[in-house]
Image (cartoon, rainbow, N blue to C red; front, top):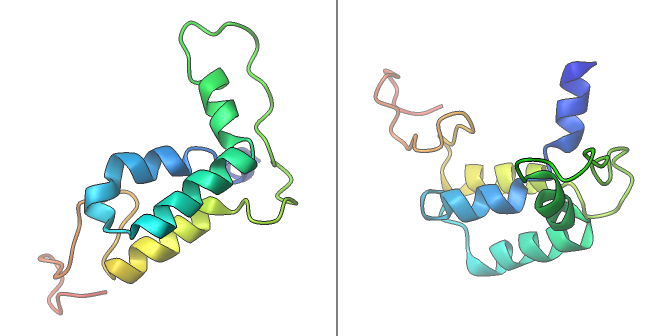
Length: 109
């Protein structure tokens, strides 16, 4: 169940991820603006501003859209898809990885 909970909260920090890794992701500005607009609309920005403080002011609120029913709030999947289009060797665990993959004899996925 732990992995399922983590999966449901992945979209929450998507805009922050795009901002931090923006130069390496090479995403166009209209896409980035859309991600920010959707993050605000889905309540992710508000959640981040309330939950990402130390020390916590109160008990952490439940993340927004945990049941994944709101239209257009699957931001994380869109970010991964866009990053993979601009860099076929994109790896979310090693964002600085680019093609060719030096450790792969073929140099690509």
